[in-house]
Length: 341
Ligand code: DAH
Image 1: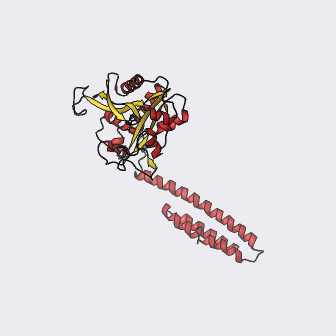
Image 2: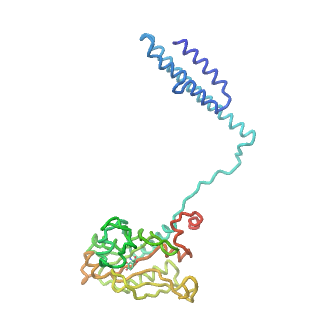
Image 3: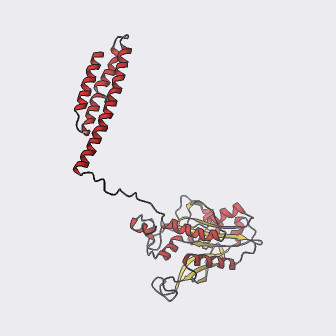
């Protein structure tokens, strides 16, 4: 056995020295060190030796394994170095080429606009309140004063999971969660997040989009507070010269309700294609929190008042950056995304 091992070592090292190409090394490794290789076979046959010969032969065989493995590594290194040298000599490897630039990611335009909106409201004392995407019908509709047969609950508009569970169609249900957590303390929060609607996807409507809900509840909060907050927000986002127009509207969870327009940023109100010749761009919905909603949130409507608003950040980004199709936001087209950096 010892003789066999000595022969094996001689033969293996000779063959290794003869390997000239780095890609031939692997067949050498398989022939000697592989699962069915010569050394592995020798190691397996140790068991059939007489017991008194086994310790010495076993030791030798293991030593041989180490010798062969080390020799393999050394040969591999030197062949690799030789290969690089050869490449350099023939010019196949041009070390003067500039390195590859790592591709840097950037924030999605929706994330950027959400951060911008959050920062503006943070300066006015609004904190961020996170609420769930998967909601109960009760919170998304009933507690917001949207009665059972209201058109907004139509199967066409809402992704239902079952009779009671759905994907929120608006961030407004977060109002109820927040009020129930903090009542009767005053609150001033914004609730950003994704909303979902079962709708035809067009240039103007997507099945998912963000909203930023705003809510302030406390003593003596009036419509003037709402107006001041929204005028300040709009001017911070679109420039100090912006003017706002509050139009009467209706939302089930606010009374009175308004829709808010700003003078057109493209034509300064003169009338153009962006504002469809009206001079105004609609930017959000708002109102004074309905007494029923205050009560559902745990506030006594005879003591507390509040205002609320709902902003579509993708819509704000579309106006700000003149994006004419909302489908770009989730299309993952780098040619679009790379423009926001
Ligand atoms: N939830 C409304 C929507 O999805 C937006 C909205 C309007 C929210 C008025 C409000 C509000 O808080 O006061 O269309």
